[in-house]
Length: 191
Image (cartoon, rainbow, N blue to C red; front, side, top):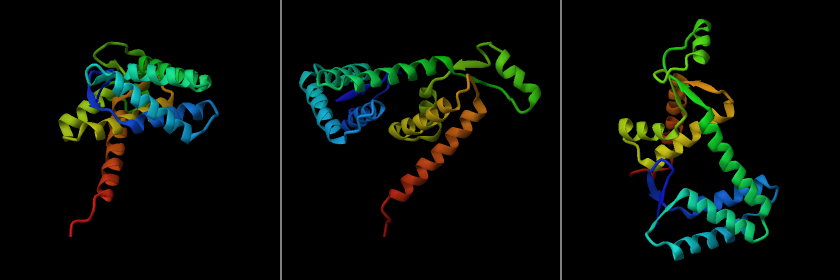
């Protein structure tokens, strides 16, 4: 089965992501139960495969099925936590802007927040990081998505409404290096 992401990109369906989503929802609701998360993820995956008309499904459809399964099995708080998490991230993506240009000193700081032209600022979009890593550095899309998600999490945690593009680039380079280093360490030694 293929998952169609909100940006139109496609990737294979991963059952483990469903387990992670349910486990995170349980954690947010103060109900940590990995066994229940695994069992409910099995139900979600079974339902998705059984009811798929064409072997492609959107992330929003998967989210809806997960929320329905949680609410229908007595885990309403986890369903609400998952929904709130989804909308919070969506809201953050709409509110954060990336500012292009050089901002190296205090005299440039004012421009960072006052220049609202489309040529210098754009809305946060982690798909741009994915496309950059795939096109420029020839990384596989799942690895590029992992790196972009790591960077996005850092940007969200900063709580800044405007993030300099140079900072985003440094975060991308740092996280890409960490992921590639870990990947190389996991490669079996050729003998």
